Length: 352
Image 1: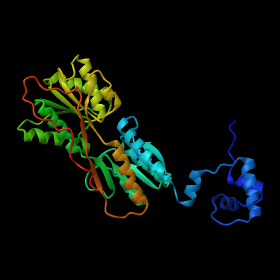
Image 2 (image 1 turned 60 degrees about the horizontal axis):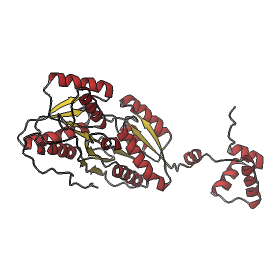
Image 3 (image 1 turned 45 degrees about the horizontal axis):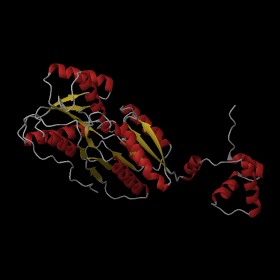
Image 4 (image 1 turned 180 degrees about the vertical axis):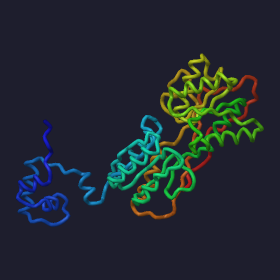
């Protein structure tokens, strides 16, 4: 049987004082006579009492807790953002609690209600879709919050996201500079603004070079099902010379399908992945990839949320972060193509 931890009431009973007196001794909030203080200290030591910091913060209204709600904890990008934020807020003595909406609007609404009931000092949210009607709960609670990654319209809250159109332009420019004109974009869902923006950026580059828009295949969010959709698309269309995958999951899907068909990366088809993880560089054919500045994203998310928690009521700030193209061996020049110089980095700076 698990022993029940002692409470402040147990300490008060042993010391022969009120719970309020115990609290005053432990917090120093109000002066207590040395005689009573010694009784409380002796009782605390005898019972090995440990105060519950969360309960104390909730009672005082000074919660050093922030919450993060993301669409999917299986997605390494979202967990990387959580980790980046966590590394920043520790220096301010805050703790973080994390929940997932599983990409469903009803779950997002339910999780937000539960999180807000704990009265966190602030909240960081990656919405599960473009509508984000659940923001009404946050605004009604007057809890400071920041929106990360998926941003649409002109929200009332601060936002921090990648410059997605620039990411699409950078990737497409690299492929075109290598001589590729038949480019396939592997997307999760065009229902998400950030995915549409990446497609738009890529399409703009092709049009500027008098080339046709790239083909786009929507693969969804389940990797196993996505592989079947990708194979089906390839069965009914001519094989592209290059593939641009717009997320880490579509990158894995493209790799799986390429391997199943016995195709050789860079020789039979070039591939640009999205996000940049250690495994991408540890492959037999390392992947060219669009890297998101996750550390910068975490730092700025906490800077903006921390400012709002401290009372900053200035107009909402919308920060766009630059991406970087990591050049590796999964992309190569099309035989016989006239090559152009390839830009490796978008010259953008975060806007404040």
